[in-house]
Image (cartoon, rainbow, N blue to C red; front, side):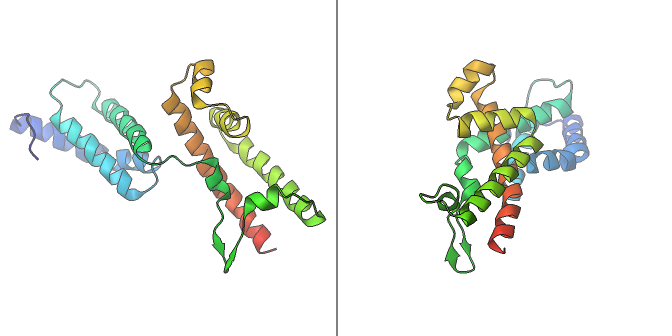
Length: 189
């Protein structure tokens, strides 16, 4: 694939110097916001390709690159299946047995053991939600717990749906990590 823009030696040097100066930080920025290193590498490559192919003057190259990176990250989320809150409680094979969190947390019958585990879970969930930034916590609670669709939340808050989806994703990732500790402790109890 070739670029349609003619590269003068000066322009080529400017692009090369900018890429060298910012690539490590920009890669770190992208990597924190996507699921895999491969996705981060792909997005970084797309950002730099767009930068090299841009024909318009750019006053603040660093800001422009981060803005393009944010847009590419959002596009990446749209391409992939978005994580659901169910992923937090996803049952996995644990020492040969299948453990279903939903059955434990919402059982038909209540025993002292399930009641104890349920109480620990809700305390830990509340603590984990309190650790989140307010915007992430609110969108998670509204969408997952209260069942409000993103479209309705967007109308209420004036935030774009993509922003709300991104906030919920970060909340889910945090909760998944935080609650996996509880899961491990309870399974090894």
